[in-house]
Length: 121
Image (cartoon, rainbow, N blue to C red; front, side, top):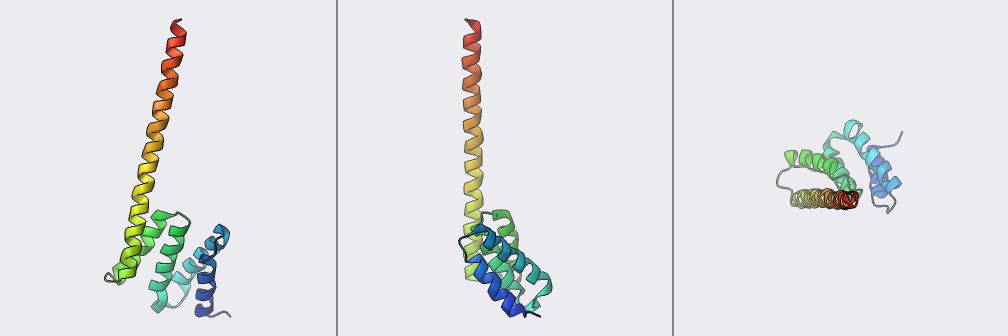
């Protein structure tokens, strides 16, 4: 039987990897620890889950984890900073998405305009 502490250290090593597959395995381990591990360490599991999800650009999942963490320990400065980083990333990704949709609409509109102009000839 592997202790919760050993599993925590293993998951922590996995999320520090540069490989997405390792990080995902670490996320799975932390998620399992949240439900089966030491209840007193749950906030640590949540923090590292938020960190790992941020690393793999799963910002909404990261935000959910950090909100749960902050509901238990709202004054934690490190968690507040991670929360701000996640919110900034969500906003930035949202703006990028809108810019891509807008750019695609302009391109399609231009192609339709060219098509109509050629059809009139």
